[in-house]
Image (cartoon, rainbow, N blue to C red; front, side, top):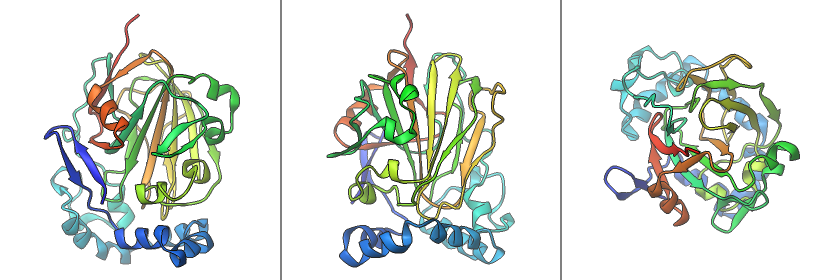
Length: 297
C-alpha cells in the first residue's frame, strides 16, 4: 500500500496504482525480477508498447481507464471521443483555467501534477531515492562541475503516475539551455520499484538542462523515463526566454519523474512538504501549486 499526503485535507490517501499487480510481480517475485532484467527494463519493450499506444486501436482503452481511475475530463481541452490514440489522451492538454499559476515572482511552484518529495541541505553523494537507498548527483547527470553548484542545496522529486497530466513546465521566467541526453534502462519509477532497484534514477534513461531562472538562481532540471515511456519530448527552444508556467515538454505513456535541483539559499520550501518528506511520505500536488518562497537577501 502506498499512502500519499493530501495538503488540503491533511490526511493520507491510498494511491490507486495503474498496473499494481504487474508492478509488484515484476519487482517483488523471483520470476518477475528475472523478467524485468531480461525484458521489461529494455528499450525495445517500452518502444513496442509506446508504438501501440500511438495507434487508433489503443484508443479503445481510454473510456475504461478514465472510469477506473476517476480522471476528471472536464478540465481537458478535448472530449474523450476526440482522442485518436491512447498516447493522444495521455499527453492531453488541460484548459487554461484548470491550473492557475501564481505569477508572484517570489512564489515557487510545482512544475507539474504528481506526488512530490523534497529534501533540503542535500549531500551530493547521498541523495535520498527512498528510505535506505541513495544516489549521487554526479552519477545522475555525469557532470562533476555542474553537480558541485548544488552542494547543500535542494532536491525536488516529482513522480508522475500513468493517471496524471503528463506535461511538465517551467517554474519561473528565464532562459533554458540545451538538453543533454543520457541513455539508460526503463525501470518503473513507482515506489515499489524504487525500493527494489538501487540508484534507479541513475540507471534509467534521462535528460537534463540548466535553467537560468530570473528569481531562483540556476535550476538543474532532469526528466527521467520509465517503463513504457515511449519518449521524453522537449517542446521548448533552447536559449530563448520563457515565461513562468510555460510548457517545457511532456512524457508519452508510462509513469515518469521530473527532478529539480536548486542552489543553496534560493528557496524556502513549504514546511508541510519538508516534514512529510522527512517522514517518507510524498505530497500530492498540481502544476502551478505553491511549494516554496524565494529567500530574500
